[in-house]
Image 1 (cartoon, rainbow, N blue to C red):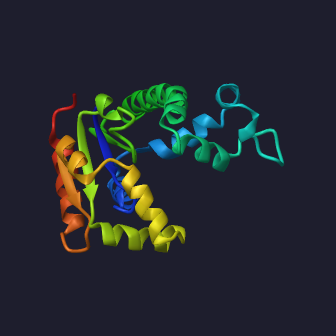
Image 2: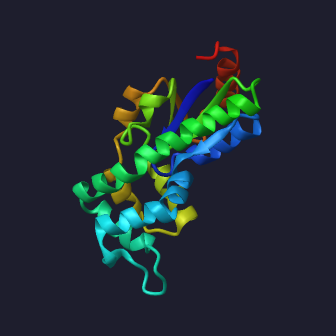
Length: 202
């Protein structure tokens, strides 16, 4: 089965595009959602607590306060690396298990998609065959995020600055989808869908 990575910066609209692929009967694995589920598993949560200490515990329960953990790791690259070293190997294996399950239960499916905001940073690109990068102008991305998250433009701009640059993503990707409300995005998705459905499975 062909494994396709779908990535893009915040506000580029990759999740919406992933939904379109899903409507076209393509299995889609959300790396962000699955990483949250994996980190909430008791064994994994205990390992995270041992690594980062009780300061990340919620005041109201014995579980991790996700906001406290995020504040701790996203301001410190070493701390983020520690968390990634716990989550990423489990996420990789979970994705590969998911692919094997699709092969077994839906043998006619030719390709699947893994949607991941930090596909390259987490080295998930090493286990896919092709990468689609979704791009959009920064001003449009900020507007979308303000509408979606009710965040300020400065906070969103800071998050964009923390992510890989669009130039780097484009250079590392096989296909680029311009989700800028000017390019015909749906026809581009349909063309890629047809292409992946006709490529011989790897």
